[in-house]
Image 1: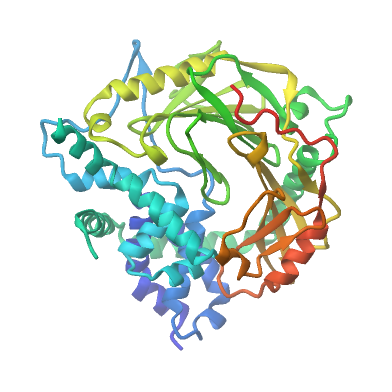
Image 2: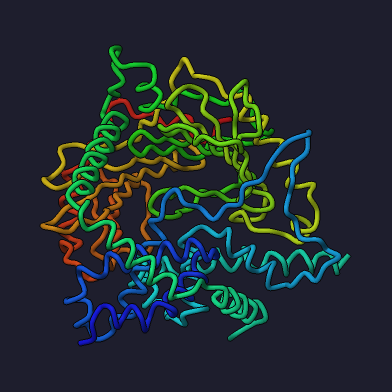
Length: 164
Length: 342
């Protein structure tokens, strides 16, 4: 069995990539992975002996994100002189449709977002996602259905406008 | 079948993953954190226990049958145990859909009549679709600094943008009490439309609404409360009440959820106790699971577990349902008449 230090060194990048997709915030991802690994270490004799410790730790990262409190991926804005600095994308610039998709993913409720990331980033099945999130497969399908409806909103609006 | 949206989601998530921070920096942070925490371990354990005890007391104050906000409590304590602050202005058409209490923290949520409250994470499980206003109260003080640039009735406040059309304003109306108003106006689940991302108009309107709601907030003499149909009764050993929430479109379809922390040996997890009235009709696949129980009065109790370290031993779900059924009791002064009202 490899040591915790070996595991952390080899897998930190993988966990950070997953957490960054999950949280939509690199700083928050770092905090989530850090806290998770700090909790993994004292349990390592048991976790390290598992068939797939990486999968287990990914589940811990997911749950850590879902229970995350207070620290939110926010950007503070300043107010003054009656105006508000709103950091909007300038339509004149190269506005990538993936930026728009990321914006939609970033504001999904946490469990819906986790479901989307587990399905489309981590390629998990309904049953696997249900096990990770501690819910029924039907709930996973419900989360995914609601999330996809929100994520397709852009397509719907575009279609309506083109049909006018 | 993979369609264009699914391909776009995959590309987006993988590109986002490419933005991950440096792993070496993370490993150095962990090493430094471990070095710092070793000599302070005993202190941290004590502090954690104190916080847990404080939360437990707060939750009991909020959820106890008949209310526990006695005459002897200080004004601040009453604020924490109820919904002592009330907005006196809301955007037209919004109705109250949810109330939540977690220890000394409370929140109320208003959305449009067609808005749906959905389950989120452990802490803020109540999200909503569409045009939404949420007023949250928590103990604490505004951090010192010069970034409090908005005035809320004479108190310095801070505006935060969580997304183009999602804003929060936070201020301290009285010492030790932090209020937050969050507003959102978007497609389902706060998502964007191209119009939102390309025009500041929608965001400006949300911000204006949020500020107007915040400036209308006053102490509430009537002290609105959260009095769900069920509440905590005699809890088994190792169970600590964490939170209570009620949501729904109207009083006839209210959904009550209690959260408890369950400690088993050296490990603890969170259990969600979701009560449904006798009119509830579980889906067929729910019947196949062990996580639902039918109570003597015909109502239902669904139990879910939040285990932050999967694989840790937890009691069988049938046992959990049985224990949960005995841990709750009917609230003699239940009142969910506020659901669906402005």
